Amino acid sequence: MRPWYRLCRSLAYGVGRLLWGIRVEGRENIPRSGPLLITSNHLSLLDPPLLGATIPREAGFVAKRELFAVPGLGGLIRSLNAMPLDRSRLSREEIRRFGQCLERGLCLVLFPEGTRSRDGTLGKGKIGVGLLLAERPVAILPTIVEGTDSPIRNLFRRGRVRVVFGRPYTLPKREPGARKGREDYRRIADSVMDEIRQLRDAERTLDGGRASRP
Image (cartoon, rainbow, N blue to C red):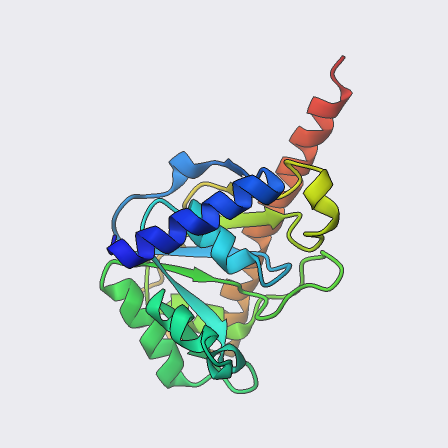
């Protein structure tokens, strides 16, 4: 991990602990080496820095292209491995760039929905996620963030902001030479969102059980 990245990561984690008492669960599930795609729901602009602060290895991030045009912010996020994404037209060049990150054995954080959820519900994954994973049998780590959509209110409700990492998995291998099309990419994207949804539902069930104990 580069010193600059480590410093920014420590600062972000310190702010998360100080302001919200951020909780992290399942960090032991994160492979410490090898290609890894972390897939998460997306609630607010706080998600990337707080996720980066809780991942125990240097990671790259996919961010909307508009952020790179903001003076100061664009240079900062580039220095922290952010890569621009044109949400209006995902190109194969962008997919190739994201794929190269994984092929080099690095960790990449991706929000499959492609945008923030306004009401906290999980939407559909973008088809580009399927395109990225169809050719690359990498480990996928479903993740959920909670509480980042209400940062002011949660200043007084410590522990409501949390990051939960699930268990890594890989997609089933395809038959050699099998053709891939849009339906295949859509199926992969849907399966990625299903894993995030299952993790969220399992955590809510656990939380409900904890709350009902005397």
